[in-house]
Length: 225
Ligand code: GLV
Ligand code: MN
Image (tube, rainbow, N blue to C red; front, side):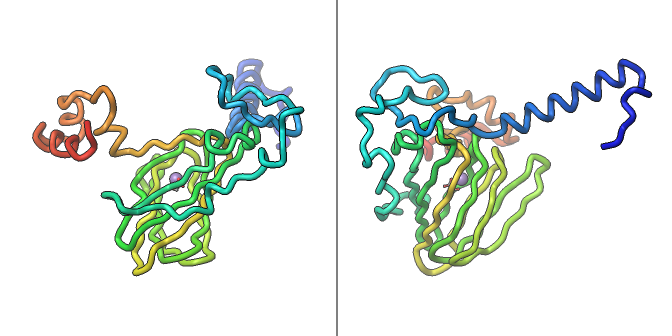
């Protein structure tokens, strides 16, 4: 950028520099922070955490701390969504602690859906291993992007955007997803609004969705709200 900063007035220069500094900070904070050591196997038994878990003593670390077989197991899709997710995040696999990555295994029965949700702390990428899946995401500008994917095809969901996977095939779909956070967070939109504890008042949801309270009550009854 060959902007002649010196020829601008001080106020303009300040705004330009402040914008550049802000952009730099934003970029460098857009995923988990970099680790300051080779590894920090999370000690999940302690009752406190500071942006991650304290490290297990190196003398107690074994080979097993670097491996996790949780994503090798088949998941039941026998529920109202017809889908199941095994989360391979730092809570399940403490070896990920501070490393800024994690993975999930997602299975979806024919006609089932991994319902609209978002990850507040991570961008997601995924690969379809089996089946035919409609993958969709919605931007903050309410633009809907989607595509039908089959085995070997990848997708990406930018951090914080609402997205879903819908099995449009005839066989069970298997997807592996990866995140740039050891704990991406998972906000299931419908459950978040209609199944929270304590419940969001009916009047709020009725006004927000422009429907009668009876409709709100019906939806709430399906999500335990
Ligand atoms: C899929 O969207 C996942 O969060 O694993
Ligand atoms: Mn997701």
